[in-house]
Image 1: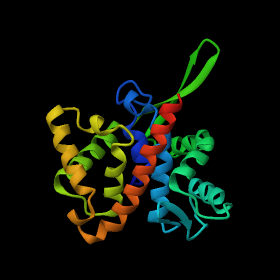
Image 2 (image 1 turned 90 degrees about the vertical axis):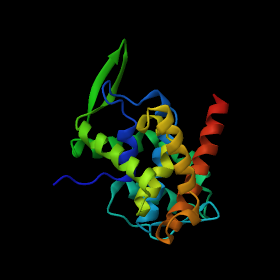
Image 3 (image 1 turned 30 degrees about the vertical axis):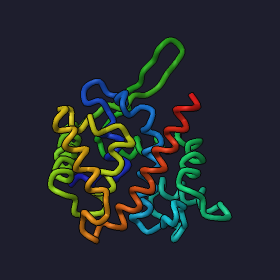
Image 4 (image 1 turned 120 degrees about the horizontal axis):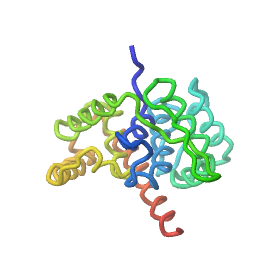
Length: 223
């Protein structure tokens, strides 16, 4: 039986062009930052960290996941809790390693393959979807969450990252359906509009999404 994909893995595969491979233009700039944000939310779900006043507090520095452990070790060295946006910026310098780990996990699950590319003296590897049905199924699930309502913390967190990652149009290519999805998503991300079971997840997701938006805006202004 195939292992379910994590939040960071779901975000990454959604950003891959279904036919050409590589990250779609709408997500290319934001993907790195959003991957870090999605990993924070995974650590939150695993009760490794807590968000307080948009800062990250370590609850449990131990994890069996190598990528989670890498982030926790870095954050645990800090003498005081730092803001989410500060950690996004600091961890961006480790983005090459983080992205490669996410890619390797997806290769191990046979969801993607890394295709070697070359142009003149430049060499790189491009992610290509192997199991396209995984992405189509994920898109169907996202549609059901937005139009039917999410029922779990993982679901609301996935929805919260779609806009920062530039993935809404990827999921909803039709203009009218996209507009409706945006309205529903905005409503869903207000705590009193959903069950109390996901209220904490919404608060955490909103904190991360706001930090991602601020960080991405600052990065764009600097280029």
